[in-house]
Image (tube, rainbow, N blue to C red; front, side):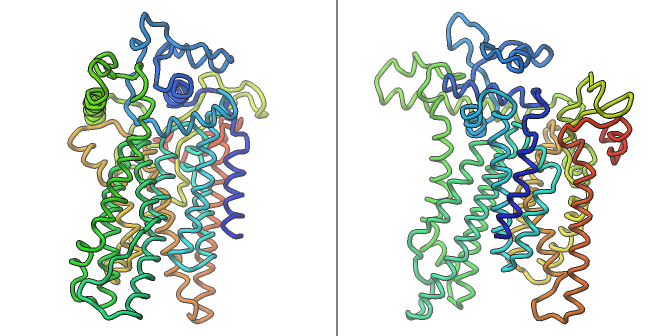
Length: 500
């Protein structure tokens, strides 16, 4: 009940006034039209206008959905897109249910944002064996500004975060069940050097499907897929070693590797390729070469379609590694943990003239994390590093690995490619930042049999920290949710000048 109540709180925050602002916000301009094209045509299609003259955006807000560019042939209207389709299909589901309007295109993001709170609460409870710490994890995620903003806008990063978190949670469940199976075998069988096979592992298969879905939202999901696959095999080796088996790593190779490849390599590939079904079955996709593919029978169709798809992916890779166009809200990876440069999602050039009780009003959506939470996460990360070095606790190691998989690769792109990047690339890491805080909170509270004074002091520290995060989120809420406030109130909420 605790996690469900925390989830209900987070869901209320995300769905309340979800249709506001009644405008196309930031990169929604790309994804809502791509999603509607997938819903209408099965593939992305070129719309009227461009970034400097967003004709289609104005038509959509006015309720006119005939915003597609007219072309001599349908394949001439194929749109080149740099991200796989799954996240846009998820946005399209909301558009199908509630219409092509701000509530419709933001519905799926708000839904998975709320569900991610429940997943994290249950995950933290499983990892700590504490309902209180599980609820604390869900509450902190519900009150993070970046997670909140991304849940209320139709961008892809909230879906990437959701599938990464779901995949990680499935692997933690699989770890528990695998260790239980090994323990049961050890009690009733004669030990062998390598140990037994563990049979079908549906939770690891589910993890592979989720991580494949992450890759089908954004290619950066592959960093987590590789890291978590290695982590799962190391957990298997650790479980066999904990039983005292003489050859735990050989046991992993002989007993676990084949199943792991199926679950964490084949299953993700199947899910990822399935997300491209519209491109494979339609003639209008970018680089599809439909006439050539259909010129010589089914076998050639399959071969040429795959060749065209691989050529498309090479173009996408070149786009991502060569994206050096400057943007006023770009930032570097080393700036992200301290929130030095957030992203302004919405700040109209003509803000509401009335409604705030002052001569000058503001209405804004600022893509920024809750500072109290993020700065606590930095301290918690340092504590978790020290804890892992001292104890090799698997929970600390898992959180550090997830944090590194989502953050460190961007340093390469920043240094080697000078790539344009933004704070919201941290979105998949936010749940693991919260996990770091919760694990550190567990250390502060101490074990259940600790002296009452120690437990009381720890509870005071943890409770006060959560209260500070709540107050900080409440203070920022108006500039996260496009409330109309006075200009001076907006300015007071800009923690640093770099936020402006």
